[in-house]
Structures are given as C-alpha cells and as structure tokens.
Length: 147
Image 1 (cartoon, rainbow, N blue to C red):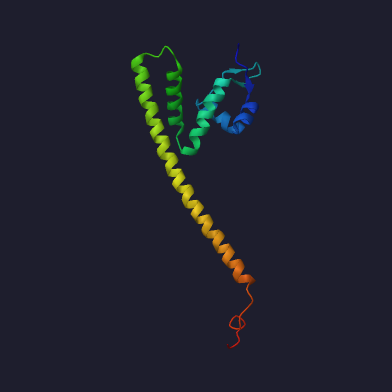
Image 2 (spheres, rainbow, N blue to C red):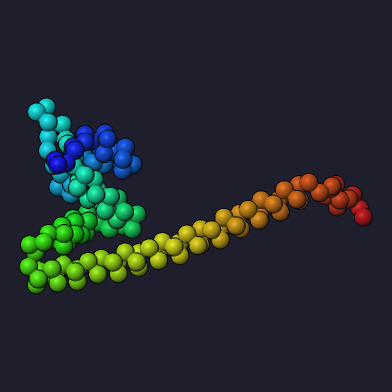
C-alpha cells in the first residue's frame, strides 16, 4: 500500500512545528518532502513525519542541524536491511554516542529545571511572606508613634 502523503499544513499540525520551520528544514536539506504536487506544494510521507519527530525531539537538547542530519543518516542506515555488517557496527557506535550525548544534555536540563523550581519556591515563599506582612495590623512603630 502506498504511503499517504500530507501537505505541509497537516504535517505542521501533527508535529506542532511552524510552517516557516518546516520550510527552513526543506531549504537547508535537513528534511525534504517526499514529493511535490504539480503546483509545487510540498508533500510529506509518514516516514518524513517520523524523521521530523526525531528532529523535534533533538531540538530542546540543543543538537545542531548538522548533528540532526548525522543522526538521521545513522537511523536510516540502521533501518536498511542491506547495510553491510561493518557499516552497521559503525552506525551502532555512532548511535550509542548520540544516546550518551542526549542523556548528558537531558541531565543538564533537569539540573536547570531543578534550580528553576527552587527559584519559583523562593518567589512563592516571598509572596506569602509579603502578603502576611501586608495583612498584619500596623504596630505603633509602623505609625511613627513611640512605644
């Protein structure tokens, strides 16, 4: 059965990526559409969608376009049954390197999120303290009266 093709708008809706981002990926060669209509509209396959999801997941971890492109080559090579054993071993090594890098980057993001959570807790505590101070009745010192 032939792959159902989707236009760029449908792909954008499915992935949560913007049309300009998808066009940029096409222009830079990161992800080209599988086909085009007679009117030159981009048409994407399910395989294109899967590649795009890999790219989308790499973005928050700070991988460069070159790294994204390299990983797509690795994944494509590993999915091909005709890939020679020596090449397959090299691709698996590269895949493990990407896995290590992704794990390290995710751990770094988690530490940043933990610090952000601590900061938010401090701000919330400060907000509660300032609300409690504002709600307290003024003392004679607050009014400038001698005690």
